[in-house]
Image 1 (cartoon, rainbow, N blue to C red):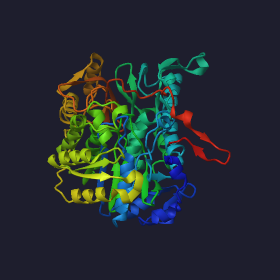
Image 2 (cartoon, one colour):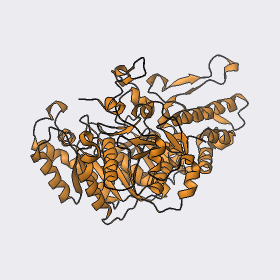
Image 3 (cartoon, rainbow, N blue to C red):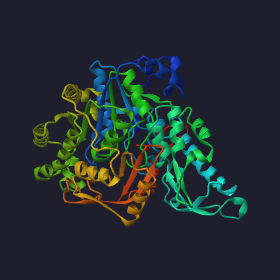
Length: 555
């Protein structure tokens, strides 16, 4: 069986100008990065900004398991299937980070015969957007340290600087470091640390900004720390907001590539705050909606994390309204949620499947709580039996969700025909989209709503440290923003061991962070890290390159 990278390398790609032309994007509106990648100019937006929006389809999934779900593969295959149905279609996806690429590799560009290409470029260097984020973030960090070195006119409390440094790589040794050692010439010593680049608030700003002017304003609003009197200090006060913005002059433009079947794909932005937002930028989504009639996009991890953030944060701030939501599941993953070990998934176990179905049921209910029609895509595996598939279909229909078998991994767009038909049907159904909470409510009330309504828990507990941060945030008037929850992706709860549909649990918030530039408050739970480490056997150990530049082991 061919690997994903082998399939991608055999692809006969078309020049990106031909792909863009399918959406009516002219050559003059492209900024080329070789033959198969390009950025779309901001002038193109000015031409189409008053066009009617196409249909927006969000792809999400059940809580992920080691058995695999295939969310991006489904997104890509569905886009190809809709293209085959005669619709002018585009996909809008996030760009993967180098940290997970070399650490624990996920399916950032899809898999099998439902992939985005050039796959190697997308997973590695691409067009430099993440470099721009890393540089801008670290420029602000350097300017803060320089401000202190030059007299500290803002009276910054060096013990309360919240702005760290970043690196687009997993490196646990950098989580806690001391800078400024070596005497007066080397700065003021202080404790700080590194986050992964995708955890940077600047990533969130790139994802949520509507243009360069909006981006400059958001960058200026970043809270970098506090003065010794307790005043929140903004990035604008450091005096380099213009310089930060100019680093994004190219990065802010959406990137366009293609699927194996030639469907246009916008890839721009990535998971922000390292906490499963996992979708592309507002700009890329809006570009796609203006140029295409159908747009397939996705959000990170399970629907409790990615989809909730997409709907409660991205759609709220960007005034987007999805037309349908696809929830990806596999029989194998559902059996894991039902208690089976990964080694036992090939055998039929209807009791485990029925128990695991509770996880999918909860995600269907959650989509419906937002007032949106749900479609379940059952990603096919050779070990699936008719009995198992019929059971899943029956349960989904009872819950009011469309359901279809997806075979896009093996067959590309052809294997997504049934799913595309169900999505087309769902788009015609009643849509009463609404967010779940008032962003002006108190932080505990907003988090409690998410825990009860989305996770199915009984409430939220704040640690003593979080309570202190809460009081300070409220006193400073920084609390009237949406909540960006950071919790494990493996469970509806904050305990990764609780699979299926746990009940009667509480979620403990250990830290609150203000992302005033991005426009949300991060609530950290459990042991979620903003600088992951590498696993015992990093994905990088499997990778290599030949003398003629052929990459192996990337997937």
